[in-house]
Image (cartoon, rainbow, N blue to C red; front, top):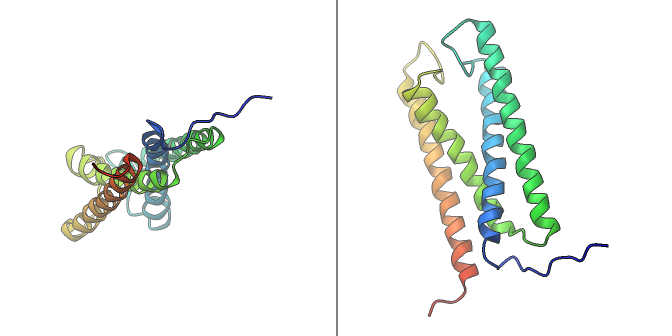
Length: 160
């Protein structure tokens, strides 16, 4: 029988690994929300709209595959941290929220504006949609960053 590690979550790197693993889950979850709500239920766009509808649906399948891989890989990393007694739950929550914001901001800036592979909607004034989408992303990033900094400060111990 393998001996359990006696490493405490406060030791170096545990908070960072917990944050990183949960960020991967958050990225996958926000991609899933985008895929399910905007691509499938509302049918506002496909991941790649610069070709035929068949290519658009194929690109949605690729996005769905990538989001599932991110979620499963992130949960495996979190389970491994927990198994070794190194999971820092507060860091994981911060990472999850950061991941949600990272995907949303990347999609809003890179996919929508820089690469223009799709827009939130078509044939409407995009400004309100873009503002809500990107402001939501920034809000998630701010909340995740504040939570992550609080955890890091708490784990560093009292200031001298």
